Length: 162
Image 1: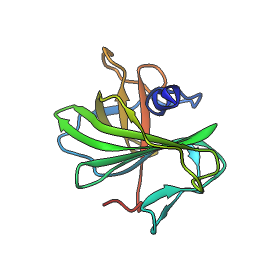
Image 2: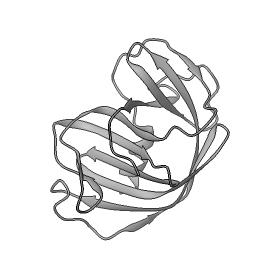
Image 3: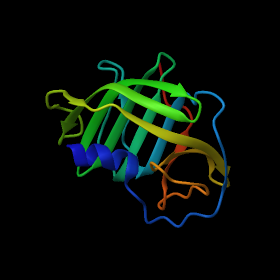
Image 4: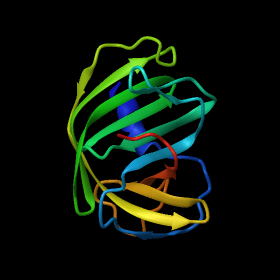
C-alpha cells in the first residue's frame, strides 16, 4: 500500500508535455484536481465517498474548504486516502491521514491504516489544457516539468467539495 500511496503523488507519465509557465500559489486552491485519464468515479451521496470503476488509471486530489482532503488512486486497485492539509506559502502539509484499499470499485473496503505525514512544494500553472497544480519533487529546482521533477494534476470543474 505504501507504494500505491507514493505513486499517488510521484508516478511519472508517458504523456508528452509542452513547456509551460508556472506561477506559485498565493492562496489555497480548493476543488478537485486529476492526473491521468479515467472516468466512472462518482460521489456517493450516502457514504460521502468518491467511488466507482472506470477505464484507464489516474489520481484525484480534492481539497475541501474545511481543511480536509481526499486522494483517490486507481492503479491496479483503488486507494482512498483521507486527512487534513495545511498550506504555508508554497508548501502543503498532508497530516492526520489514513488509507483504505478496495479491489471492487468501492463496494467493500479494507480497514483504515495510518499514513505518515508529508509535505510537498507546489506551484500553479496554466497552459492550453487549463489550470493545473504541479507537486514538486523534494530538492527540485525550476523549471518544474511534469514527469521530470514534478507531477501534474489538472483542475476538474464541477466536482462536489465540502
